[in-house]
Image 1 (tube, rainbow, N blue to C red):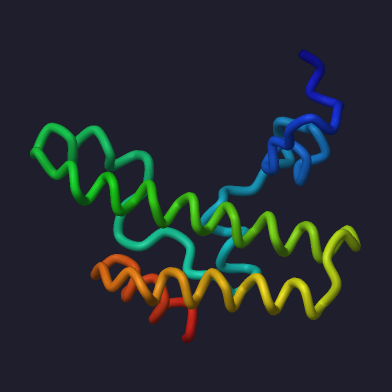
Image 2 (cartoon, rainbow, N blue to C red):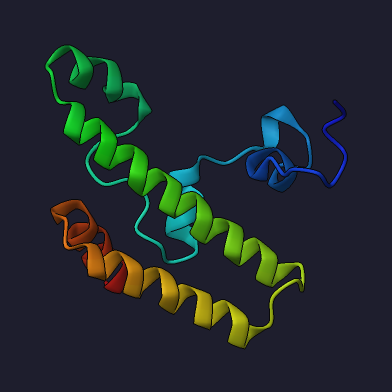
Length: 116
């Protein structure tokens, strides 16, 4: 499959304009846009956490990584004009409300970091 079609989107690849040396880490992009970014763990720590039996911590890390990716994607859609400011703000509120309704500690930490 060609990577230059619209059937799916590799967000990092597209934001880097398909240049391997131009990519920025998700953590940096998320924080640049005012989102929480990585909280306590990153991909380099997953193997050690697995070996220590910290499966729940890995799951929490993966979940927050997905949330950061989605938030960066929403910002990208706003910047490219696919979302209006109102649609963007409404979707951010849906994310906040949904995560706040879960009540898990990693989501509380995520939302607290987002508010700062």
